[in-house]
Image (cartoon, rainbow, N blue to C red):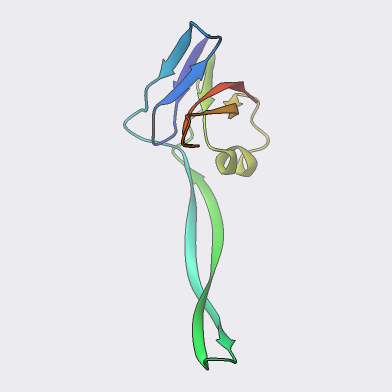
Length: 109
């Protein structure tokens, strides 16, 4: 079984205190096409300032191949959009450094 990372960044899995597995990013990454459209502005009645508002519309999944004997690490939004696929892995059990930055995961969903 092979595992490919189709996210736009390296994924580090902290298996235990002494073992980490690093999955390098590929040249292309799986993503959900998005379009941002402007909505009705929000009016702040105190200052009479109009706050611009936007809406994101989600489209098709891009760069998500079907590969035999291969699991694909993807983002949660890609997995959600392609929820019929049993070959998709999402990082789970996030590991953070002392400043709260994500530095890896403990496993996958």
